[in-house]
Length: 143
Image (cartoon, rainbow, N blue to C red; front, side, top):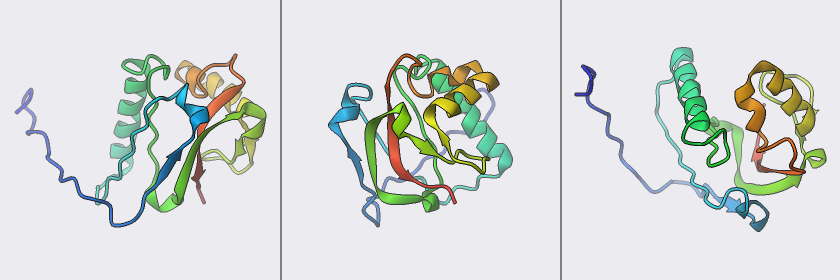
């Protein structure tokens, strides 16, 4: 037990039944020298649990991640990802997609500007404003 709570749940690690491949290109190595990916299945995540998970993610970004300078965590629904994923670096003007809870496509600069207005933690979402490139995982699709 830890501070009156149940013991930490244990999980089994298994080889994936599919080829979940993430190709990390040299272009991103200077910004993200290490990439780790995992697939968690059969979790019961209601809105409350998802909000807790996102809150934990943001706390890790802000503290251990040093405002995303040292680490960045992405959480994606597996059914929305098309493999293989390409992890690369692109110029801001080369990146555009439809963000979550949006209906129109936006470029990276517009998304960064919008997110900065919402919360200062997002100031590092694309690593730094003065950089011309940012790291991005391609083929993560939201339908």
